[in-house]
Length: 57
Image 1 (cartoon, rainbow, N blue to C red):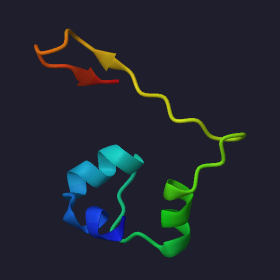
Image 2 (image 1 turned 180 degrees about the vertical axis):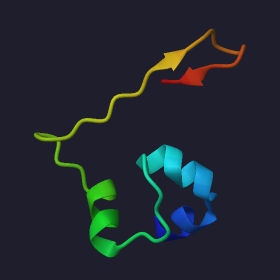
Image 3 (image 1 turned 30 degrees about the vertical axis):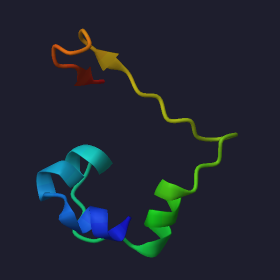
Image 4 (image 1 turned 90 degrees about the vertical axis):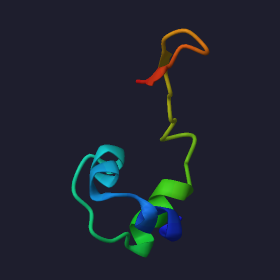
């Protein structure tokens, strides 16, 4: 996770975490990788036709 974070540009990190992050503290990283399903549920939506370019919503 830390290696992935370091590879991302500042812009990509901003879009992913919704604010500017220069480092990924261990506690924050644990929040991202350990999901408590009773409290948190990620939802992903795709817009557009398959094979014609989809957008992640």
